[in-house]
Image (cartoon, rainbow, N blue to C red; front, side, top):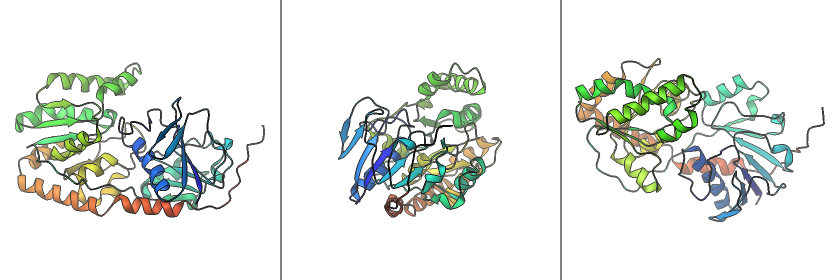
Amino acid sequence: MSHVICDVREYDAFDPRNLWKYGASEPLCARIAHLLKDAGHQVDGIWKGQAEVLVDGIRWYPWNRHPLVCDVLVSFEWLIYAHQFDFKRLIVPLNKINPILSGLEDKVAAFVVFSQEHKRQLLVINPTIRPEQVAIIPVGVDMPTQMAPKITNRLLYSNTPERGLVHIARMWPRLVEKVPDVSIAITYGVQRSWEQNKWRMDNMTEELLEVRRWIEQYPGSVLDMGRINPREALLKVLAESALYVYPADAALPGIVACLSAMEAAAAGCGLVLSDLEGLPEIFKDCAEFLPIPIHDWADLIEAILKDPLRMQVMQRKARRWAKTVPWSKYAAAWRKLVVTERVECKQPSPA
């Protein structure tokens, strides 16, 4: 078996001791590392932290003190540090479309993406990447072992607020008027996004301010739950929600997948998504799609909430779809991808 190094230093918030603290990308990195360990490989990790920690059989080294020789280097999202390593195979998993290549793209055995649309966007933005270097591995999801009763007319928003939450805020007065008992759970940390972006002085800042005022205005129906820990508590919120709404409108580039929507589908949430970029390809006919620019979402959401049979059909359809994309299929594809083939990586010559 191979010695694999997983370099996750692109993710500032990654902490192997608390994987579900932020978002879905960080836990996915760790799960890839663990599926390779479970396949028999020796796996080490490198993270942005200052400490060396051992978590579930994987040693995570600090950003500036770590091994430099391996059979397989898995460099998540970028190639900034790849020139430092001596490896036989280089793999770059991508959740984005704009990786920093550092002139090392020819050394990459596989850029791993989620979908055909993800691959298309990657190649458009990065013409030095060859199509044959791109491996499409659709991400998988675990089916929950326990379910919870649905809260009537409970919506769920579980993405970074910059990706469309403001549209729900703007339609909310109309929704409350038409469906008085409507409520929404927001599970992604509005306050953290505000602290990170409040000094940008741009449209994003204005929209986040609008979202914060909306939350304050509707304390009974708008539930800002922040970052939910432990993991089981988040899964319970997903299971209790009736309808997952995601009016993404490309405020951030490269919406090529949506891990939280997959988990919501597995928990039996109906899905209402924008028809943006990679979402229709991944979720196909298990979701209802609306076009961008965002408008008239309130009418559709009202119609679904007032039609329990339609809601149940959407929920069953989403859960059936989730069963067709199991995590085990994703793990098997990754195990096949990690083979030992010599690809030399030398430090670039000085200019």
